[in-house]
Image (cartoon, rainbow, N blue to C red; front, side, top):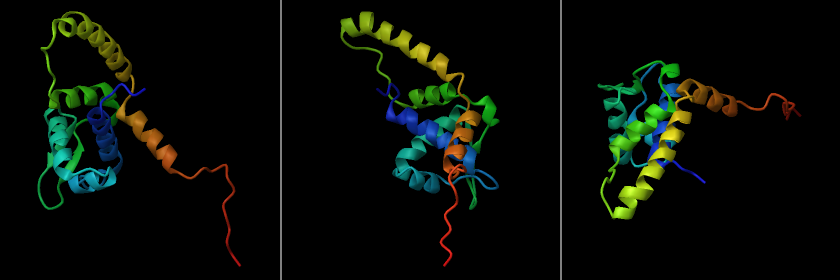
Length: 146
């Protein structure tokens, strides 16, 4: 069961993508959108929220795009999720049962999850993504020489 919203998951993916591809030039929003199969306009709103949260920085110009605003090890998954939640439309009112009983319990669970996400850095996620992108070195290389 996935407890994070799609928006939060996409925000984490976008930051990890920028961490992996922003050298030597910033990552254009169009390239990011293409890699994640998203409309650029939808992604742009989320990227701006990440800029406001000082997770990403925007670079203008013909070779512009996005790059990390801080070191990879200093950005946690929780930082990114908080920025994504702030960008979303969070309702604070509703039926009394939700506001007074269900809401506080769910808030406690969310706080516990954010505490766990504090321990996961963009550095660790980038390393895992790079490890999975490399071919398995335990498999013998195929040789198709005739």
